[in-house]
Length: 346
Image 1 (spheres, one colour):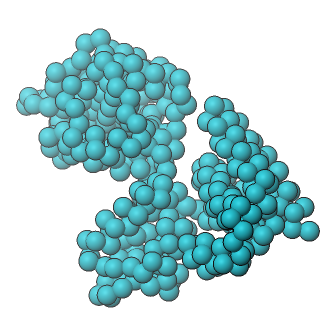
Image 2 (image 1 turned 180 degrees about the vertical axis):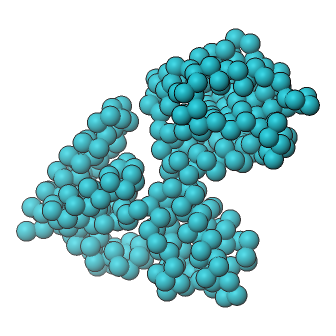
């Protein structure tokens, strides 16, 4: 049995353990799930162009014929050798779960089952079967964090030996991250646009990069900091409609209040001049967001910012415990803090 941590997945897919005959790749970032499944498939030493060795199925195929997946797993290649059965868009279908149980009881010698799924809750039947089966492994894929985004940027730009300014990199990272394939597609457009240049500037980013996250999370965070309740409600509605994970908004808002807390600590605890501290921290963010942050840092005192951090941390924890209520929990927490911002700014 095996359940890899999110940070372990990248290394695993490049060197998969041959003892696992079934691999479940799941998570809210469908683009990342698809990309990692493709990378993993190339590591199995199977000719992916051989239609006799590779069988690709969709969840609809299993619904129409529940026995087909197990039949494919138990079939032998026409000319011998390894086989890959690749199932996409899997859900908590009993037929799929049953096949994982069958593989655990009697693992096939020459067939590997690769399953792509969406965001599966902890304790869901498919996850439990993959995590508990001795011949199965579960690989979670979550949205790119800052470190992964910058690695992705370096990977795409490095192929063309393109360099990028610090401000342009920050702006680029702000507009990526909702979906791995969408982010990579935006970067490839940028590479084509800037081919032949020595340095990518902010103007290049503004000219070519769309919002690959479907909506900039910064818009919602700025509404929280400014106390703009109607604006926040509208921004959250757009985020949810665009399928951007609302956890990203809570996470970004938490980072902003942690920074505000550091600022207030320097001002209140160490008695440093407010203008000096704000100027120092302002260098760490894009110039367009500095006025909003500075205004919020002056309005929120240390105790209030600490309470906001606790409120956001609790919302993140509750959202993980109750995934079905995550949107409601996040919305209530963000609106409550935005309301406090509005009162403090008066």
